Length: 69
Image 1 (cartoon, rainbow, N blue to C red):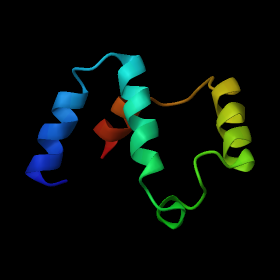
Image 2: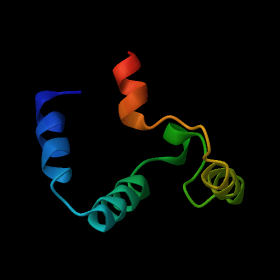
Image 3: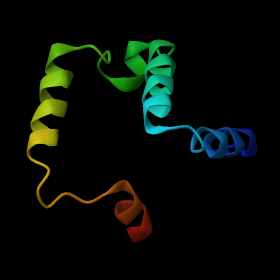
Image 4: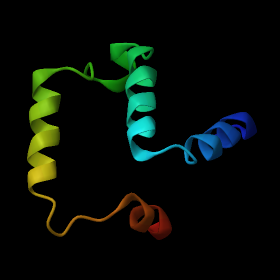
């Protein structure tokens, strides 16, 4: 990530969880569907996210996953 993007990320981390989620939504709205594979409101994607959320036992957090790198 560029230094500017890192600064932006650091600033975003100062937001509340609700504000970060809203920011993610706004950013996804500006991203072409081809860039992420599926549009963020695609029914298949939403079903998969719901399934993964419901089956979160034994999952690894992003912090843990990143630490493994």
